[in-house]
Each structure stands twice: as C-alpha cells, then as structure tokens.
Image (spheres, each protein chain N blue to C red):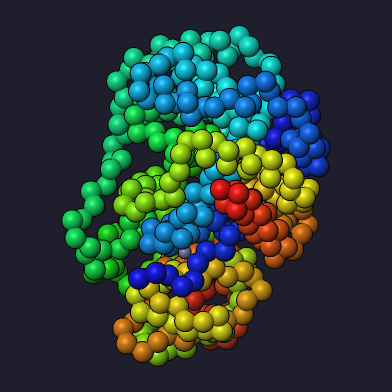
Length: 223
Length: 209
Ligand SMILES: [Zn+2]
C-alpha cells in the first residue's frame, strides 16, 4: 500500500543531515522503510550533504600531521576488512504481519505480539521507550471509534500509523501514513472503526493537553 | 563548533559569504567517480590516494562541525576513507557520487560512535536493504556528474537565510527548534525556509536531468 501522507521536506532534510532527535529519527525511519517516495527524497537530501562536504575549504595548516595520517592510511590498505557485528540483519523470507518495522526493534522489540502495553486511560494503552537520548518515543494503541482530546504540540510531533486508522482535520491516516505536525496545529484525532489504531510517535517537547487526559498522559510523556 | 577551523568565530553571514564566493580549488572539476571506478576494478592505489587527499580534510572538517573533537574527527574520517577503499567493489557510479557516499558513511559513523544512538545503524541497513529491492533512479555516471555540478551552482545561488539554515542543519546537526531559538526566528519560518531551499535544490537537479 502506498502511503498518502508523507514527511515534510524540512523533516527529510533534518533526517538526512543527522539533525533530528533520536526519537524523531526512529519514527521518520519507520516511515521511510515503507515509503519509496520519501526514501528518494532522503537520497536527494544526502546528495546535497555530499556537495556541501565537498565544498568546504580546508586550510593548509597541519601539513606534518596530514602526512602522518596519509602514511597510516597507506599502511592500512592491505588490512582485511573487519565486518562490524550485526551489520546484516536477517530479513524474514515472507512478510510476517506480527513483525514490527525494523527501525523499532532496538526500542520496542521485534513483534506486535510481545508488546507490553500499559493502560493509560479508557481505550488507550501505551508503551514508552526508555532508550532515546533526545525527545520522547512511544507507541499508542487506541480502541476503534475513540476520540482523543484536542491538543497541540510544543515543538513538533511525528506519528506513524502501523495498524488501524484515524481521522482528524488533516485527513484520514491509515497504515504507512505519517503525520508530520508542527507546533501551530491543534488537532483531535478520532480512531476509525475496525481494528485498534496502533501508532508510534515522537515528540520533541511535551504535548500540551487541555483537560482530563493531560493528567493521565503527563507521567507518560515525562512532564 | 563553527564552520571555520581557524581565526576566531565567523558570524553565520560571514560563513555564507566565505562559502559562496570562495574560489574553488583547481581539482574541483575532477571526476571522482572515474577514480572510484579505477579503485573498484583495479584496486588502483594512486586513484584512491587522490580521493583521499581531496576528501580527508573535508570529511574531518565536517565531523568537527558535527561536534566531534579534533582527534575523534581524524579517527572517524580515516575510517570513512578506509571503508571507501574496502567497499569499492559495491560502488555504482550511476547511483551515487563519491561525495554522497562519504557523506553517508561519515554521518553514520558520527551518529553511531559519538552520539551513540542505538538504532541508527540498524535503520540505515534496513533502508539499504529496502533500496536494493526496488530500482532507484538510474542514470549514467556522466549524468550523475552533470547533476552534481548543477547542484553545486544551485547551492551557491540560495538566498542568504536559506543557505544559513541549510548549513546549520548539515554542518551543526541543529534541529529546527534549536535553529529557531538560536536565530530568534519562529519555528514555522525555519521549517518553511528549509522546505523552500530543499525543493528548489531538488527541482534544479531533477528538472535539468
Ligand atoms: Zn512518505
């Protein structure tokens, strides 16, 4: 299925430049793994990075040091390359519907079935990942037909739908779609009928919830 | 870390001026992918060392801008160049420029080793595996070369503010909100300027292809 909602080009640039927080990068990568459109944008942004690196003007200083490094490099050309461990993750032969997208594995494990959901509010379960240096990374599972409280975002939110769907003012978001929102957007997602909606989301700053769910979600998002 | 290694700290505007008006070195028009093909097919050491001499100090500067210490930047840049030599066989000149390849390797090493982000390399491998599955845009090495030259000219023509935001993203790994705070600009303006800059560069490259 081709995603209908994509990453903002500004997010694409930040991902390629290595300028996204770890949490945002994980969600962006989850989208990229299933979206050849955005993936190609990232490749373009990396070409820009290559040109920028090449355009730099090194000064002529440190000639002696450079000679030394050059000699060291020449000596290493006969080394047998050491492959770093775990460089080639084994891909399953057939697509496994229980398998989480690969970018999520270090943070949430490998399968939907093994996720340890925590109850947050009626119809809302969540898992917060501990392992990110920057930003908040969490998964949400929301029962069908449920309305989330109206909220806006402190700095930015990136949400990738993995299963199920929801609707808000920006449209219909199904599996593979990403909502790349900035701080100005106020929205109130409503999950679609059918299966529970499972998303992975990243925040650069805590959400601002007016109302009751704020108290529920605040411990979750670390306020 | 700032963009220029010596002589105090240039303001971002000075940095842009330096970049956009500086004379490019004599070997700027060099076709590095031809050298890379010689490395791939004949393990040509002279070709590789020409690539090394040109790119090593540039990759070093890039890594220092990203926040590596001088010593770590040297170490990672050496490793990036060594990987280029060791993995030359998988180099496809029609798919990527030498500079793009090195940019990716250096960026990945930095995020993996210096920022120690657990998932980054896994993500990159997952994306590469996916890339191998479907055909990306293909073209000859000559087309890729012309495209590279156009991209260079287009970067030089960016309005000052856009150029500044692009550089803060790529060379200082600053997030949108960090840029907004540092420059006292609204976050929305930072994002829309970056968006415009990227779409312009992309249109130039693709439109002329
Ligand atoms: Zn996309």
